[in-house]
Length: 168
Image 1 (cartoon, helix red, strand yellow):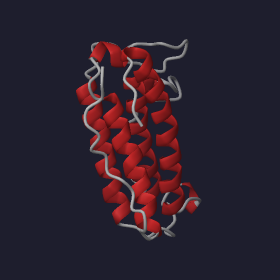
Image 2 (cartoon, helix red, strand yellow):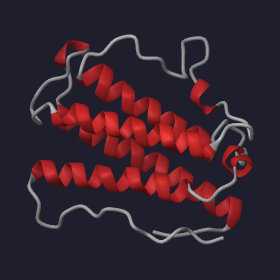
Image 3 (cartoon, one colour):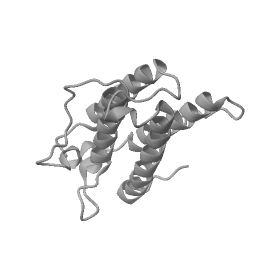
Image 4 (cartoon, one colour):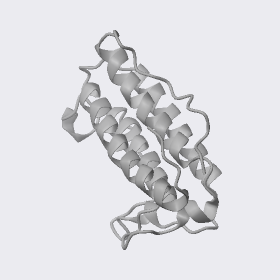
């Protein structure tokens, strides 16, 4: 199988600090969607490793991570619901072929939109509302770039194993 045409946004080659940081995060976010799109629900939920790691599970994890870091930690929102818990720390990874990849991707894209809206309200040096202001927005943006890129690498490998699709 081949991937859809590559229409991912590219980070600016000569942007300012914030524009560059956000540009690289946007590329990673778009790459997650690009790499997952086109798989069947069954393939997206197929376990190829001994762990619970699947394409659908990774995308669900990234949606929860977006909400946790931006809405809860940066903005101080409370009462957010996550798929993980103390009783089931890997809850977001528990998917079946009955889970719709399209719905999972739509939720991820919604989480990213929520994160963008939160980030737009703060300067890079503003401190998070949660965790005693331990993190700045800059740190959270860079951490999410790292987290997203790391899991994108997992998705990339799984996609190749599932249907042979490869791409930058």
